Image (cartoon, rainbow, N blue to C red; front, side, top):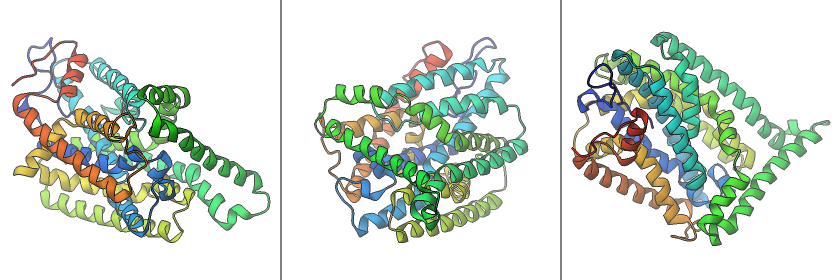
Length: 425
C-alpha cells in the first residue's frame, strides 16, 4: 500500500510529496481495485476462526455446497491475487519514490525513514486491531528490495521471476509436503509414523489456538483481545516474514521492473500489453480453477486446502497477478465515470482504507461491539464485504474532494519528511 507519490518538491535542499500532476493514474486505480479485493480476501479471517481462512470446516457457522462453490470462486479470483497486486505496486512505488528523490539530491535514508514508520504502523495494526497485518512484512521486505533499486528493468524482472519460482518450490516442499504425508498413501508407508504424528500435532495446535480464542471473540473485552495477541502471538510477525518473504520480495522486484518498463503508463504498445494481459490471466485462472476443483474433489481436507492456498497455487497465481496488473493499468489510465473515479479515490487513500476497514470489521465482529464473530456464513460475510466497499467508495471520494491526502497517507508523509504538510486543498 505504498503510495506512488512522495517525491522531492521545491528547492534542492527540501523534499516533499509529489504534486497531483506527477501521479500515475493507473497506480491509483489498481490500488483501489486491490484494497477493495483485499477485504474480500480477508473477510473470513475477520469473521471466523483463523483456520477457516483456508479450511471450510473451520467455520463455526458450518458450510454447505453453496459455501464450497463460493470457496472455489474466491480461491480462483481473489485469494493471493489482491495481495500480489499490492506487492507489485509497493515495488513500483519504491522505484518511483527514489527516482524522484534522487533527482533532487535526496538519499535512501528518506526511504529508510518511510519503511521504519510503516513498520511501526504495522505493529500497531497487528497487536491492537487485527493479526492479519501485512505492513510489517512489506516494511521488512522493502528493506531487502531497496538493495536492488539501481538495477535495470530487465535484470529486475529476471531476478524477480527466478526468485518467485524458487520461492514456490520452497513453499511446495515446506507446506505441500504436509499434504503428501497427511492425505496420501505416501504418508502411510512404513517409517513415516513420526512425520505423520508431527503433521497431526501441527493441525491440532492450530485448532486448539482457534478454540482458545472463541471465548475472547465471543465474550471477551478489547483488553482481553490485545492481551491475548501479546501473550500468544508476539512472534507471529516474524513468522509471517519468514513464511512470505520468498513471495513478497520477488514480486516487489517485478513491480519495480513493470514501472521501469513503463507498463503502468501509456507509452508502450497497448495492443501488445492487452494480449499479454489476457493470455497470462486466463492461463493462470485455468490452472487455478483446476486446482480448486481438485481440492473440492478431495473433500476440502485441512492440509489439502492449506497446501493449495499457500503452496501449490503460487505458480499459477503469478501469471494471474501479472495479467491483472497489465489489464488494470490499461483500463486505469483512461478510466472515467462514477465508479472509476471512486475506485481511484479509494486507491489514493488505500493506506487509510486498509487500516480503516480493519477497524470497521472489528466494530462489526468483536463481542464488545457488533458481536457477529463466528455467526455468519460465507454468503453473509460477503454482504459485510459489500458494506465495506460502499464505505470505502463513498468516503474516499468525499474526503479527497476537500483534502490532498487520506488521513493516514498525510500522517505517513509528515513522519517521513519530518515536517507538517498542508492537508486541505
